[in-house]
Length: 205
Image: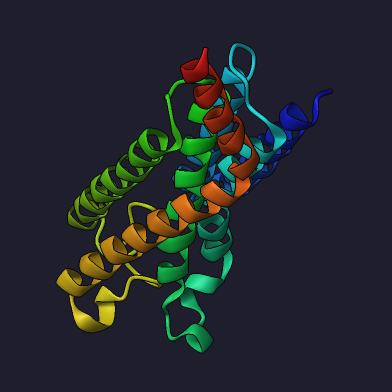
């Protein structure tokens, strides 16, 4: 089995196993776990018709990893002053941006890095905004709880109000996306040099 598909299968298995456990425990985190498994399964399906490197596959699963781990214990960790949510938004935005940029560049869907970076960044930030809307809807329907549709441990709003929570989440999404562009630029520096050389040669010809 190719390395990229192996990585994705491991993610699907891991997230699905956690989903089954959370389902038996009747925990709301079942939504988070199975959504992460479904996303990685979708990327696995895409790998049949698109180029997805092992590096891209690794980043795709890492989008959800800190959130899933946080559901187990870290969201309620007093040692972190209940701020695990900040790490989750930052890391998810970073890995999401890198994943999108990697996918676009590897499949030649963008003419240059700047366009791929713009798409990756704005797709990540806009998705983050919709997630904030979803969290608010979850609070209206469920109230204080745990998991994607819950409002509780890890949400800074329980201490400082929902406005600050959403503002900080959005800020960390923005910072994570910006750092993600820098990380992607470092990862693809060789490919970017190759694209520049191709353009120079085509102009000379």
